[in-house]
Amino acid sequence: MLQGDLPALLAMSFRAVMDQIHAQLDADGFADARPAHGFVFHFLSHQGSATAVEIGDHLGITKQAAVQLVDELEKRDYVLRTPHPTDRRSRSISLSPRGWLCIERVVALSRQAEERWANLVGHERLDQLRTDLLAFVQDAARERPVTLRPVW
Image 1 (spheres, one colour):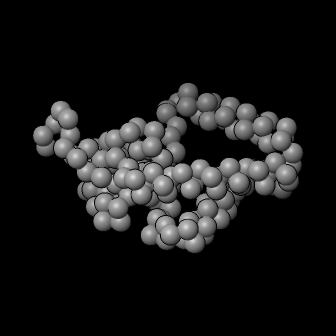
Image 2 (tube, rainbow, N blue to C red):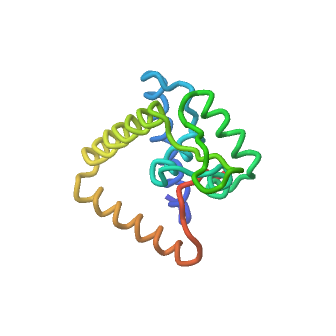
Image 3 (cartoon, helix red, strand yellow):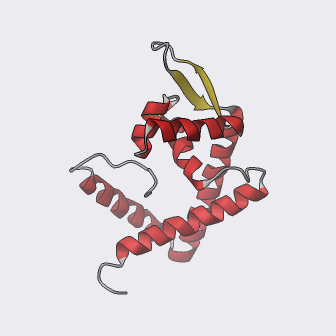
């Protein structure tokens, strides 16, 4: 391995597991869920609800692009739009029951991936890797917040 390859390996491992998860999601009836949707699902599953502006800010995209993404998710029955509790001009976006089912499946598939990795390198090493990666994220967060969002 060449010096400086670690970031590429981290990106490749993320991509590999996401490809595996999406292949299984396709087989499980969520073929219309794209990888970009997962970032919205993750955000909403932790926030409860958000506006299109908040989703756009989180993803690093324009409000217009966020609205298009939310439109797509609503048509596919992954999110619900309801009146915003304090802003009549905004709509509150939250996961639909189908969106939550998709999230639950992704969590289960992620656990399966972690179990495969534990079988490959051992539980202790995997726990240490998790600790080390968290330290990297916390170090990067000293300069600006680090969130799970796509690398466009």
